[in-house]
Image 1 (cartoon, rainbow, N blue to C red):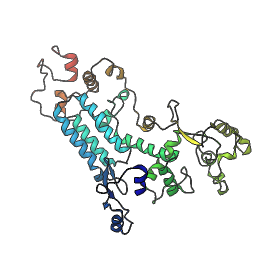
Image 2 (image 1 turned 90 degrees about the vertical axis):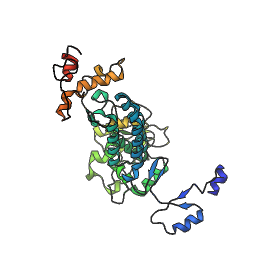
Image 3 (image 1 turned 180 degrees about the vertical axis):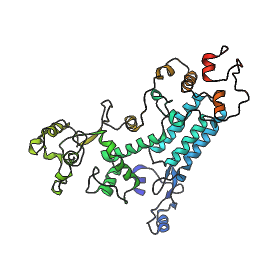
Length: 386
């Protein structure tokens, strides 16, 4: 700490600092006294993020639920329209949850509680005319464009897996030496001693094989048999495990890549496999072999990870709505767009629908003509006074 002070000019405020020890650490009080910093225990919140010993539990994330509840209670008194409430959920609550999901793996129970608060706020605590799952679809698929937090959570874990697989960071190097060791991340099996984070990385390997591509410098950093460098598949996937023996462990692609050219004839391959190998990109200007981000259907770019394309890779898709252009046409006020949206879904809370839900209605007839029961069809198409 003194070296840091002399190097950067920054001085540690010991009164505002706390030191945290592992449960296996002995002489905690003595070590804290030597540092001159008060000792504390996890969990603790730092920059709004709950820091825990293991994975975050629902009770550790109570701060997020309380934050959402405070914001919702403050907004309820403002008299916002249905569209205004949707925009607040999209621009405030979803952004805060997204920030936390970039840092920790929020429990599913916490996400469910947050979404329940959002849904209650959207419908003002009353009857939910449209399900939350329906609203969280894309507009082209019959929703209003909200993003389900569970899918954002899944995309965030994929981003974490990308950081590990692409390497190049101290965290990735430490995780590799701690859990992978002499094995290969594409073939190692989950173990009880693995952390929740590493198990998450292993669980998403199949998705990653369809979204990344290997670009070679000289092949020395690519496992010949186990890395999925051949048309997003590994040689082990193509040839099968009987052809993979211990003497082939650790072989790299430099065995068939020489002087910047593929030489598959130096190894026995079928003509089709040789064609796949020859199509693998070689870039001698690279500092080393690298993975590039290239999911199916994404436009070619820099090869760097993009959260949007990652989200599109894992999100649930639904049939396209034939009413999209009619409902969300340009120039139509948002209030009218949402009204038309509810009409086409048949979800306006007219008196006939309220009666069907068991809500007491003094008079089910139309308030304008007082002749026919009030329904969506009657109000917009049949009532002579509407």
